[in-house]
Image (tube, rainbow, N blue to C red):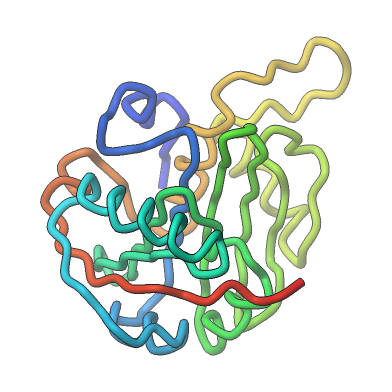
Length: 204
C-alpha cells in the first residue's frame, strides 16, 4: 500500500476521532466475535458509528477507574478493526499476544499527554514496536526491514536537530494501512456497526 501521512490529515479535524486519547487495532482474519472471545468480553452491545463509542467508553472509565476498558470491534477488508476511546488494550502486549496467536495484530495508541505507541505482533511475537514520536527507537523482528515503509508513511527518521516532530500520529495511521491494507476513513467510521464490551486490564 502507498498510504502516507497526508492521507490522514482529516483526523485532526474529525469529530469522529478523539485525538486526545485513542487506540486503533487491526486483527487479521478473525471476525469481531472471535476477537471479543479472545479478549474475554462477556456482555456485548452493538453500536453504530465510532462517535457513539465515546459515551460508553467514558462511562466505563469512570465506573471502573481504568481497571476495565470499553472496546468496540467492526470488520473491514478481511481484518477486524478495534476502536478504543481513551483506551490502550490494543497496545498492551500481555493481552494482545494471546489475541495474535495464529494471526497478526497491528495497533497504535496516543493518550492525552501525547505518549504514543505502535505495536505489531505476529503469532504472539513482537514484529515491530516503537513510539511514533520517537521512531528511531525500535524493536522487534521486523524493526529493520520496516524502515523504508516507516519513512514512506511519513516518519522523520533523520537524526539530529533537523528532525521534525510533526505528523507522527497521521504517519502511524498510514503505516498501519501499509501493513494491513485497510484504509480508515470518516465514512468507514461513521457507517460501521461495532460490537463492544468491557475488557479487564491486567494487573502490572
